[in-house]
Amino acid sequence: MPTELEELVGFIAHPNPQIRLVAIENLVPYSVSDPSIFKTEKLTPVKHLKFLIRDHPKIAEHALTILINLTADSSVVEFVASDDKFLGIALGLLVDSKEPNANLLAMLLANMTKWDGLKSIISRKQPAPESLHSDELVLNQLMDLFVKGADASYNKNADYDYLAYALADLSKHEEIRKFFLTQQEYDSVLPLNKIKVFTEHKSDIRRKGVANIIKNVAFDVPSHPQFLDEDQINILPYLLLPIIGNEQYEEDEMLDMLPDLQLLPPDKQRDMDNNNIQTHIETLTLLTTTREGRDLMRNVKVYPVIRETHLRVEDDGVREACERLVNVIMADEAEDGVEKAIEEEDDDDNRIVEI
Image (cartoon, rainbow, N blue to C red):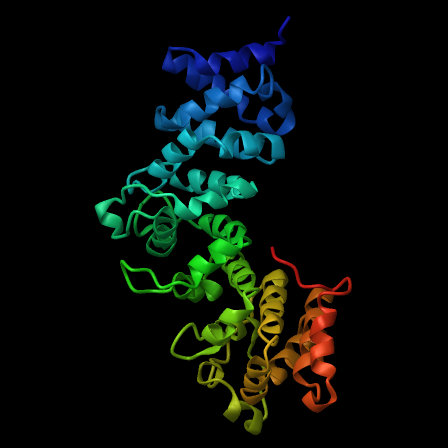
């Protein structure tokens, strides 16, 4: 016989909306404490939950919350993310400027992108809402939601911060890295240029997601000239500003630094999340793969910034990342030590990996 909880799960498919609401509201805590009750009968309860994201907003809210919790399980996330019809419904709701549960949809999408098969989103299209001023490519719509929707400016119910995590997971795939580096026809902008400005945003989620997107895309070595060119991506200021604090530098060091790093306010603070600092430093290290990248970092005095970061941030991961970068940019090119130091990033336990 089914347990009382299993019987309650059955009521989420009841034709009476009031009964559905009472049942699903009471089931939310069990999606964390006892998720197995939703995995019976070949995941039939999950099928019902997927249907409910279009129900009354309160029912949909609870259904999405449960799905977010359940998709921490790899078998459930594949079951949900591989459902093409459900994905289309979720994406359609997500871009609706009046959708009350848009943030929860963004969180669910962030979980779904952990399934590698979702990289197929690169070619997915859907009509774009007029108010979004995007094109029919879903990735462009997600980018525009993330940029234009910050601080609830597109949808009063959402800030779309969790799209940062979704885009970060997607950026692990080579074809989606190429997307970030390709000027889009509808607005003539590189997608990476749209999001680099969020490395100092007030949202921890945005900063972390964007830091990881930039790092993942930086694994595309042929694009490094784009990254470093002042007239293209010009990424260095967006990597260095989050890791610099209010420390004072010698005048000869300061004069050669990037203009964005000069004359900073006395209350300037570095990112409070040490993981973000480490990620930015690792991205800088990736950008030393070419001789041009190493020379540029020497010329604009990246070393003093890393020196002070190493001194002031009490975190083993950050300090190890600093040391690896310093080993490269302070090496003598004539001694062939630089290429060896870079190669070692792929050979030992300190290898820089995609996130």
